[in-house]
Structures are given as C-alpha cells and as structure tokens.
Image 1 (cartoon, rainbow, N blue to C red):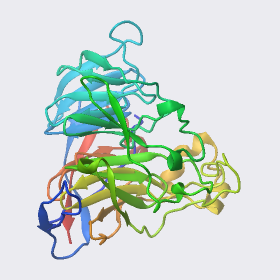
Image 2 (cartoon, rainbow, N blue to C red; image 1 turned 180 degrees about the horizontal axis):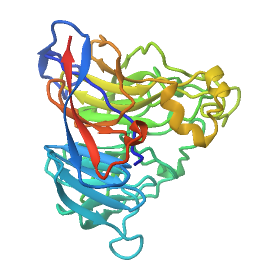
Image 3 (cartoon, rainbow, N blue to C red; image 1 turned 90 degrees about the vertical axis):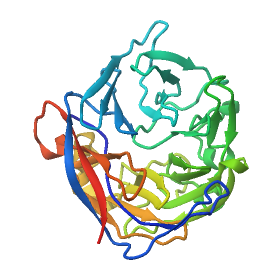
Length: 379
C-alpha cells in the first residue's frame, strides 16, 4: 500500500507573532523548546489502496488514489463518508487531482500534477473545471509538498507557464513569479511572489532543480524551496511583499551545492539531497519536516541509484520535524519514525493531528488504511 512520506510533531504555548501586517495576534512561548511526539490512538479507514494525495481539516479527511483516479472522504473515526472515481473523457473528466484543499467555507478543490484545477461537490462528484488563462508548462508535480492553498476568497497555486516561462530552465526561480493568485469563480489569475536574494536560486549560479513548497496562515505566506533550509515570509495583504527569511539550521541536510553547468542532476545519481517535505504554519510556530539526504559514499556503496532500491532510502536517512519561531529560535530535532509516512491536520501545536501509517515499511498486509492520532508534548 504505497503512500507518501511524512509525519512529526510539536506542541507549544504562546509567542509573539506579529511579524506581518496580516498576523498581529500576540502570543508567547515559555519553558523548554524540547518536544517529543506521542501516539495517542489510531483510526482505520475501511479501504485498501494507495494514498497519493491527502488533506484533513475540521474533523474529516479526503484521500486520492492515483491508480483508480478516485477520491475518498472519511471522518475522524475512519468512517467513509463518500467515494468517487472519475473518467478521463467526457464532460465530467478529471485528471489525477493529487493536490487537495478544503477551504474555510467548506469547498473542496483539487489540482492535478500537470495543472488542471477542479471544484468538487460535497459528495465528491465533479462540479466543474476552473479554466485558467494560460496552460501550465509543468509536466510533473509533487503531491507530497503543498502547492495549493487559499487566501481569503482566492486560491494560491504553483502553476508555472505564464508568458511561456519554462519551469525546467536553470534560472526559472530567479527570473519569474513563482505562484498564481486565482479567482476560483472566474479563473482570472495574477502572478505573485518572487524569490528573495536570501535564496541561492536568485543568483546566476547553477544548482540542482528544486521545487516550491508553501503554506498560508492569515495574511502571511510561508514558502520554501525544497532543497534549501530556509523559510521565506511574504505579506499577501501587501501584494505579496517580502518580509524576511528564517533559516532552520538542520544538523544534517545533504546538498550537492553549486554545479559547473546547467542540467546536472547529481541528486539521485551519486547522492541524495535533503528535501523539505511538509510545511505547517501555526500561530505558535512553523512546523517543517524534511529528509536528511544520503551522502555520496553510502549512496554509491549501496547502489541506491537503482529504482528497485528506492524503498531502502529510509534506512540511510532520518525524517525530521522542527518547530521554527518567527524570532528564529528553534525546537529540538524530532525524529519521525519510519512507520509514519505523512502528516496531516497540523493547525496548532497544542492540538492532536494525524500521521499516515506506512504499512510497506512495517511489512504487514492490511485490509484498511491506518492513521495514527498524534500529539506533540513538551519535555
């Protein structure tokens, strides 16, 4: 039952937040910044299949199965509420809505890994396709990372291709807007968010191809490039004005650094870059999870370039969770066990959230999908 990777932890009290004009609430954190992750319970969803996309909000979740082109919605007790498969042809066709987003007003949107944007009815039946003013140039997509979110009544989307911009160009992230602000009612789109000079991708040097990963809380957008341990903050109420960059200083974050020429793909051939996996802004701090990466000698010795050995990667690197405060202070590094594959539903450090169990790692055959109910406990 292949799913996605991730999980992790936190729980905090309060700390001063008001960095952006959109987040003026003040909270303080006192006491230790050492945390541990605790499994409180688990729920089972009576469904056997892959989890290739996942969203959880307000007591219910929705998952996407790539092979079946299917959405399935369930409640916090694991009860299946709705299930719907989609055709690839005809007026109600849907192509692989891996990115999923419940909005504050209860609507469900999905975006495919190559750009189509959809709205679904409350029973998961197809409602409509949202037509955007240009075609995306992206031909792949990361369903694990967040590239679809909401702000007020609009959607924020990684959707490269405006004016024919090529997202595979070595200087795409330097030379172009990274996101589109979309009116879901009309499909009108407006470019926004440029990479700041604090990122190495703003330079004329060559690096491994990267990916955008972002989350929104209030009027603040938090953005990372997946192979750079920095979190960039922007004020959406000020037209995406750049605010600041916060490094989260991992102890280990493998990186093949500057390349001598464009289109050198070193990660995955001679070593494995570290990779930011998930980003959850909360009012008490930003939760970031990442894989540490695998250095060259270990990667070569164990022949990890072979796709058949991709499942062995967790044996040679840790999944890590860190809490990052706006003043730059950091929690301890919390190791996410390999039997937890992906985290969902982190909205507060003091509230429980969920982690998808990795049954392939455990090596058990199951007739259902398991989610752990998790909580962060301060030491």
